[in-house]
Image (cartoon, rainbow, N blue to C red; front, side, top):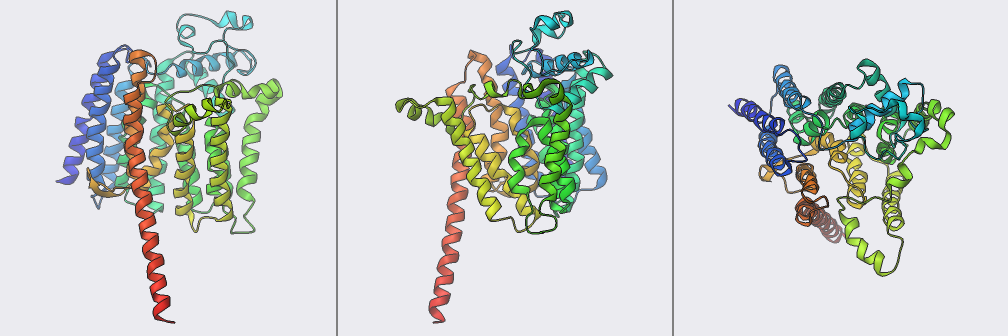
Length: 455
């Protein structure tokens, strides 16, 4: 009966995606989109709470879960991407490379590229005066997809959805390796965040996910060379997986201590090499200027008045604070290595969390790399069927971050939407911290009593 109810919720989830498909331009119909998104998220949350209580999940049921995810995303593939115009830059970069030019050499509005402009793609490109920000593995993917189907937006959408589903296949293997039920794949596959950001917006994070999940699986299996290659490719696809290097490093085995970082560095260097030879330092593209932008700030937003009061450089202050927090966490992980592979994977959330809360530019699709971890570590409990802990906080945040699109209503961040996104997360993280401190205090008290009684 529970399995039937689970798949009934999956079928009902198709309705919000059909509604979103019928809206057309989602920027012009932001409120209607938000209704569709959160209707899908409510059904998804119910499905996740139910899935966490199921003890069995057959191979046939896994296939059905994938099929439903494919249909959810397949509906959105028929809509032109409107929530984000990043994908049009992907297509443009693919076109530029098809002409034998480096995407890091000229911005789209450069006179040298005038002959490539047309109305189908050109008019939707953002930052026409900026050189591309995307790393080399992403650029290689754009070049391949453009050659398969020149200027075909839908092919890019299908590719990113396909990457997300391939990540799901890898996640099933990771779940089994971690002795978790494959039913947890529902938490990843049916997430509205995953569906909208890959099938609709075609963000390249869809291609990142199978690489990143594969890297976590390799860490669990202690396959250091494979971990280095996959994490290197993931970093060459979207840069931010670089943050996970200290958490996933395995220094305990002296013979294998340097295998992962060396293969990581070699893979990353080989990806950059062909573009560096033609563009030099230009391969950084728009990245340095990117750190001057601000959108959807979490804790970093609280620091702005403080920086302004003491006349600190705002962008530099937030950047150094973020880097400092990440450096401290990384140093702790290096000095106190994880006891096993699963603990190392769990540590990833500390680096992802610090980046999420302190970065000055947080878009909803940046949270996609959290979904596989949530699928691994989310637990059943009393809060709408979920446990009162940090993982539940991140689960809800990966839905509530959809409120960031209320930006399109007034073309600036909406204060109540910011509060609605972050405050539930803060509350659950603090509750989790309090619980851990309480347990730690109980342990210390018990040990002290034991010592006193035996003296």
